[in-house]
Image 1 (cartoon, rainbow, N blue to C red):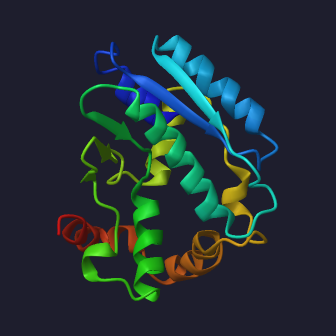
Image 2 (spheres, rainbow, N blue to C red; image 1 turned 30 degrees about the vertical axis):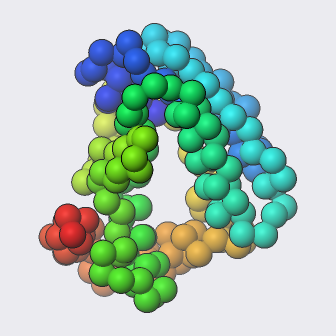
Length: 194
């Protein structure tokens, strides 16, 4: 919601499409769909949405949800002519989580963090909020008097989610010792430019 408000108010919306994917795993799925659709209407942009299948009780839910979400987006992109740019709302806190998860997984240095811009041939994936913390996004949303729905699955440590374990258990403990958002800023920036 923040990215839509920030980006779409500052560009020509003629060739913009807002894509929303309803996973079918959260009790707020229908409210999220309605909120995003009404925001797209307010900003006068094209709106499309897709629905996940069989995700609610699946094993490796995160991976399957991501695969279905991107299959939906890529199917839409193939219907367009020319090269497209896909914006995602990943932020700095997502970068920190990715760094720790990928480090523990033993990934190569060039794979430790998300890149701001990645070329996939027929489209580019751009993450314009990677330098913004979640705290700053919340402050901006409140300042702009914008509405959003918090994804309740982000705090659920009972689902089979490695990211949620880092987000809700390990990183809060690390942050009690050190302000890693500040101390790792330079390292994250260097890694994302490799």
